[in-house]
Image (cartoon, rainbow, N blue to C red):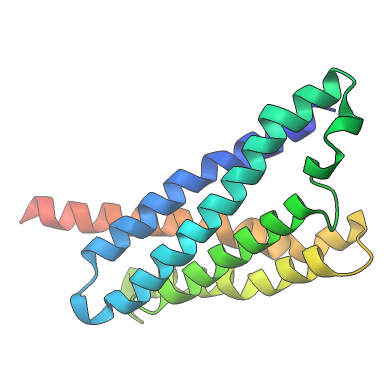
Length: 176
């Protein structure tokens, strides 16, 4: 402490804007008849972004500095610990991210490269069930975190696959 928390909150904060921008780009390139799904994905992405950004900024800018300065007892309510207010913010944020990927998955074709993007998005959405279980199980333990391991793979993989799809689309259009 505090390097472990600084790293995890900073890394997690760095995911928010790229994810939001990817979902926003997806919304703008989607055919109008399927935009309901991407619009829902944008809404859930904003919920994710607001909740987790608020959490990570509070942890990085308030909780960690106050704790280092020996004033942890003054900000106990702000600390992200199992079943605390900011723990729940984090949980709801990542559940919203899962819903965003489930909605967005509906716009990808079921063939070619988009099939794989779709699978990654669906896998991330489904793995959110494990995230919810870990966050809301009454007796938290560090061993419980192993249940959420699929999400640690599906979340970044879905972002990478979407970025690769954008690159493929960009390359096709630049060759036209």
